[in-house]
Image (cartoon, rainbow, N blue to C red; front, side, top):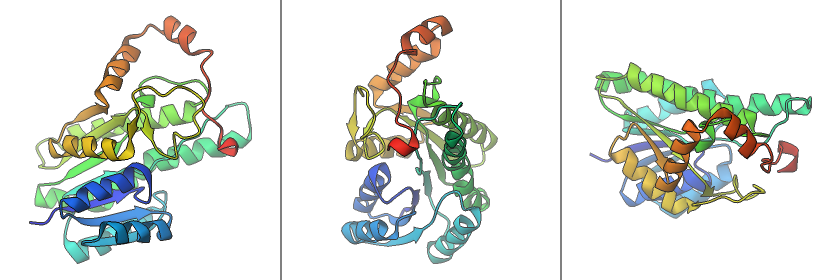
Length: 255
C-alpha cells in the first residue's frame, strides 16, 4: 500500500526536505503551508501524487476542511508531521512582544494540536498511524531573550508526551523529534555559534529514520542529545551564570 503522509510547514526548510524524502519513496503527500506559490513549486519538483493546501496552522476550521479533503481523496494518513513552527526573540517588558509571544504559542503549540485533531478519530478507528511533532532542544531549558520560543517548545514536548501515553495500546504512535541547529531561514539570522549544524536535507533523512522506527523521543543530531542531557542536569545557579551573558535571538521586528 502506498504510504500517505501529511506535512505542515512544507513550503521550505525541514518541511520541504521531508517532502523530498517521502516523495522519493513514492509516498502520497499532503503538503500544507501558508505560501501557495512555494508549495506549487515544490509539488512540481517532487512529482508523483501530491496535493497542496495553503493554510495557517492557527486556523483550526481550515485544517479540519483540509483533513476531510485529503481523507476523501486518499484515505486516512499513515504519518502526520506537525512541522510548522516560528521563532523569534522576545522581551517581556516590551509591549510589542506580547503579540509575538501569542503568535509563537499559537503556532508552535496549538498548531500541533489543530494539525493532529481532525485525523485522530480515523487513525484510532483504523488502529494504526504515526503522529510526529517537531519540537526543539530549546525546550530543554529557558534561554534568555527567547522565553516564548523555549516555553513553546517545552510545552510541545510535554503535550506530545501526554498524547503518547494517552494513545498507548491504540495502534497510533507518537514521535517527538527535538532538533538541534538545522540550516534553514529560521536559523540564518541567529547571532551566535550553532554547533553540530545539519543541512535540512540531512536532518530530514535522520528524522524519517526515527519516524520509521517509531522512536518515542529523539534529539537530532546525536551530539545535541548529549548537550541536552547535560543541560537537564546543570544546576540552576550554574545555568544562570553560564547563559546570562549569552547572545539573544533576534526579536520579530529584527528578523
